[in-house]
Image 1: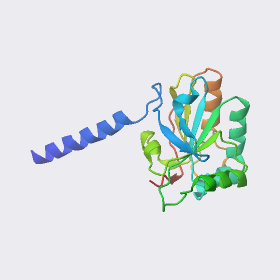
Image 2: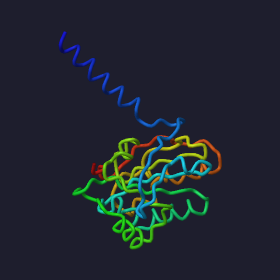
Image 3: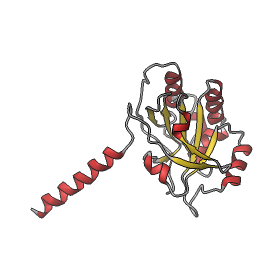
Length: 199
């Protein structure tokens, strides 16, 4: 009987966690976060625009793959061209890999020629846990109405090798452009890959 009760409680906790997770076709969780410039940001501020959320960690080899190759900057430039808001989120806790202050985040953005709309600092992991962000990178696309339309990997090949980018299916790019054009996303949920978010 005790074993049955334990299994039931485990199942309940599992289902409760899943119920709290963001869901495709539902409103993206709103949040308040301070950006690298000290400004308070809310995802609801961007209603009327498509929003990309990118979890990032400059010290992660999977993140470096997409920045050193220029792939992430190209995607950010494409977002900019299509009037898409791009929010890079750093959820590394103080003392953990990837943690930076606002000036540190700005220096990283400058040094790698990145083009996000803003870099959000999430040292407590509040925003990351709200979105159940697991890896760097972990990507999300929110439509003009604030509805989550994509969550998962940046592409289909889970490696840290830049040479794999060309042959991978570009999930994030496809999802972003589909949402901009008002079309259905072909792969709305995919498996994210990268370093674990350092909560």
